[in-house]
Structure formats: C-alpha cells, structure tokens
Image (cartoon, rainbow, N blue to C red; front, side, top):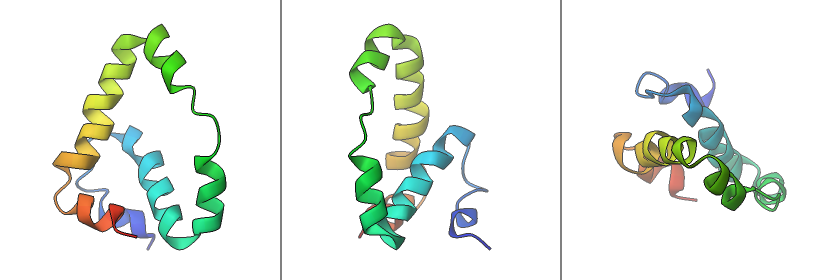
Length: 79
C-alpha cells in the first residue's frame, strides 16, 4: 500500500494529491525533491491571470492540507 493511501479517505479534493506526493518525496528522496522544488512555479503569473482559480486552490488545497487534514500537518511537514 502506498503511503499516500493513509490520507486518501480524508482528502476531499483530488487536487491535493500532487502536493502530498511532493511532500512524501521530500521525506523519501530529499535530493530528488530539491530538484523539483527548484523548478519555476509560475505562481505569480497564475495568480494574476486566473485569480478565481488561484483562490480556489489556496482555499481547497493549501488550506485543507495545512488546516483541515486531521494529523496531516504534523505528519507531512516534519522532515
């Protein structure tokens, strides 16, 4: 069973899977994760061009992972 399956029953949005996988990668393969995190994210451009979509992801993905997932915050963010 993949480690991400631990949280799937609690995830409300499939959009949270990629950030969760990246956090898992940071724990399991820090060097590979560092390469991924160095890639350009285009966040400023995305926020400016699609503010409604940006707010949706901030609320439903970032907000959920940081505040709503029971126990996920401590489990995912501790290295």
